[in-house]
Length: 391
Image (cartoon, rainbow, N blue to C red; front, side, top):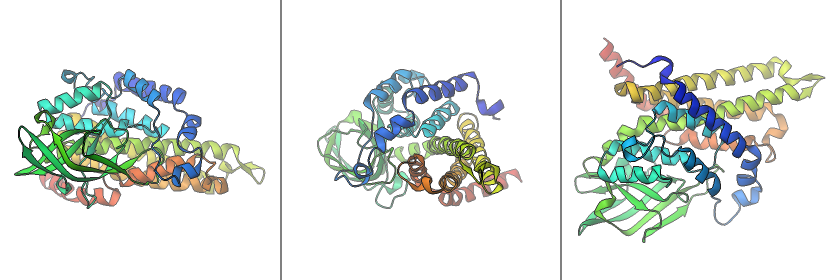
């Protein structure tokens, strides 16, 4: 199956992008962001409990706009739009550095879609209704593969008991429920566990990104019913792996949006900041790096939409394209972050300059689900297989 024209980016996808950009500009601008996450560096980094920035009113408006339902299939109460549309939304979220559980909820949505069980469908209905969710699938070694989980499950009557700890859980303190990978007899299953269930403890991590929270989630004799089963022990890992291309697309799109903000903000600064009686953008030492920023961001964005379209139209190519996109987006994030600070000069290193908010979000995203080096290591065998098939 070949890809449609323009990566499937049609009027519906354009509407999602434009409406999201307009809404975030009006309701989640940089002034709001600064007040929410960067009002005081002591609150951000020296408080006893790491901060968890979240605007509940804004979240309710996001739910009303249907963003949580965008990737949920129609038969589960969602809108069921293309992965390209979801990527367009994620790009605008990254451009605004939006502090919300939307990205983590989208990632959980894709895993639940691939689980394709009654339990997964019930969770999708909850997400479509506005309940934020997140994945708890990573073990002590930091691998994003569900096989790394150290959470274990055992049967107890009609339900199960969970014990263990999930690491690096994104937006854990904002989530209504977790999609937990747990090892049982015969494999790894997926279970929906309420964030406030007895025996669940959220231990916040102190991370550099001010727009997210992260935590280790401890499950101590957590009792769950049969209806909490999302995927059986023979299917749980497969559901996560099948969703990985979509997950990589969402995170890479977020980075592309942030890189675009860094590019535009730096270009605008170069037009108004003067030195030697000229705007600094006049000098080649400034204009050339800005062009390089644009090239890096555009290259990554093209790969992101190629991968998003492949998820819907060329699933056999989706993982290869998605890992290429995440690698390129990670590189662009690092490059644009460094150049944006450098080209702002001395002010770029200060707390008062908003650049640090996007810089830190980009740094977090670089390593989330694997950085460029990790993606290329995973990509190499996929390229070998594709090359062999072509010959």
